Image 1 (cartoon, rainbow, N blue to C red):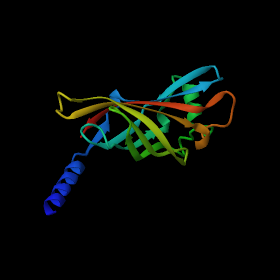
Image 2: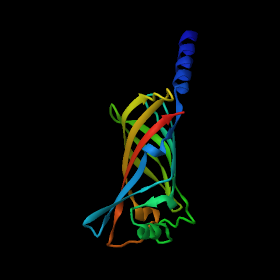
Image 3: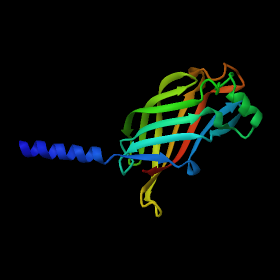
Image 4: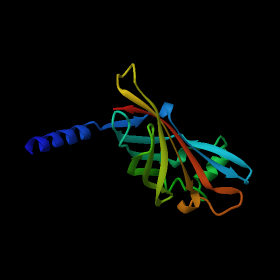
Length: 186
């Protein structure tokens, strides 16, 4: 019985120690979104400033994300629209400078796919959401000799639930998120 308990304790400690910290490489990552405009077209944009950290295994499983996105960094390739999105009509970036996400659950859904549940905070409102993810691949970086993982995370958020913009027929309520990440093991 002592051997089984000792073996179990060793196994658990190895599993816990297999977790490491990963950081998003800002030059090779993008936090993007798309929203319907006038119910006939789609406008895309992204946030240029973000800090995304994860704790995960070497195979990028059992993931725990912490995300901080700067609302002032919104970019839709139209400075006038971007200024309006930063204003009190939408993100109110001066009062709410960050969008945050913190993982509350992880579920492996396939060989390279997973679902993340977590708390998303936008415009001072926190709601639980679920995002779908895919590990595109993992390599050993030739320079650092550390692991790098490529990920794609997608999901949909109802902007009205977070108080972003008013109820208007010119904009869709649903915002499609597409986050492409290159994560570097620390």
